[in-house]
Length: 114
Length: 110
Image 1 (spheres, rainbow over the protein chains, first blue to last red):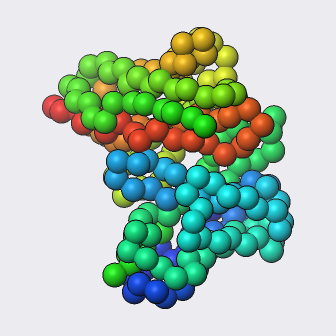
Image 2: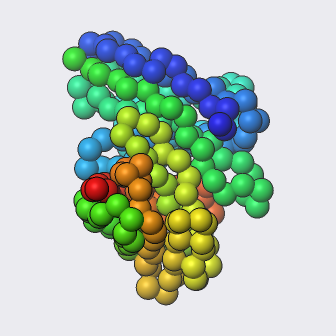
């Protein structure tokens, strides 16, 4: 195991409510990512972080924000959830270039927006 | 940007060999990855290619041709537990994040 946990693992919420998903790692890796996975689309990058307080947008960032105040935690927030954000969300981590190429994934969070 | 194509579904027989192809277009290439994902689970790393050629790891091998923008994953001596989705992903130069294809769902039949 790469020492990545996600919480909650499952969540059902209503349209318009705020939702925060948490990713926690014990590997002290610099890079952390949030992906969503939907049928027919594969994994798509939402946001990523390359250090504490350093984040950037991925290809599907609209409607999402992130924060990283500590190396070990990367939070994904849906300010006002919509039904189109029903998905499975995966967090991933990578070490420094030259030391690790592999991207390790957390167990995923299944989010349903009604 | 990147464009990654792989077949949606494949079926193979237990004990046989199957090859899953992946083609990609990228402005700057810095590695190709294969992941396995069982239904309801997280993707797990299978292989990484950055230079042309074949990388072998047990029953799984991965091939890369950078000039053709082409890779394949070869699974030998198929087992029922190999039924899963196989994800091809590319890393662009200067980036650590990966861009994934939509995945190939492999069904291994007895």
